[in-house]
Length: 167
Image 1: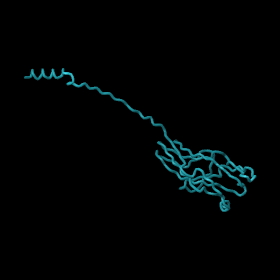
Image 2: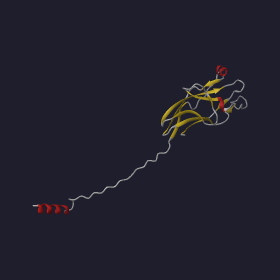
Image 3: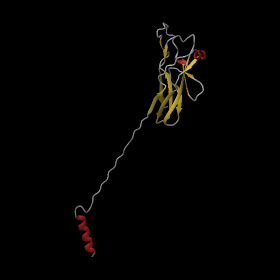
Image 4: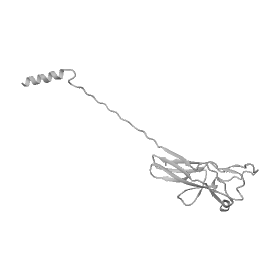
């Protein structure tokens, strides 16, 4: 009886299709994620303000809309702002006035939640810090300093840049 079972087993192994072969293989996937940063001014990036006598008496005029800046990174990061030139661009707009060379520092900024304005320069100045990776929205108020003696009639323009840098 044992011999019959053994013979049956040997024959079963010899019949094609009865015994299955098997093999396996594997691999690896690598994801090389670099440092990712972004910044986008959602609102308030292009504004025109028209100061009144009261604004000149107060020595400033506030922008009508705060900058709403979305930013993010996959690392801790800082949000910066800077003026693009040392002086404002001046268009006499038919007034005949010459360029009074309004300095970049006449544009002030602050986080809406902060207390005092900082005069802008042409170097990066910190607006906000984010210790954790992720996306954030910063509300930044802008203010233009005014002076009766320095600010003659005309159109003044200052371009600025916001930047995100991971330290």
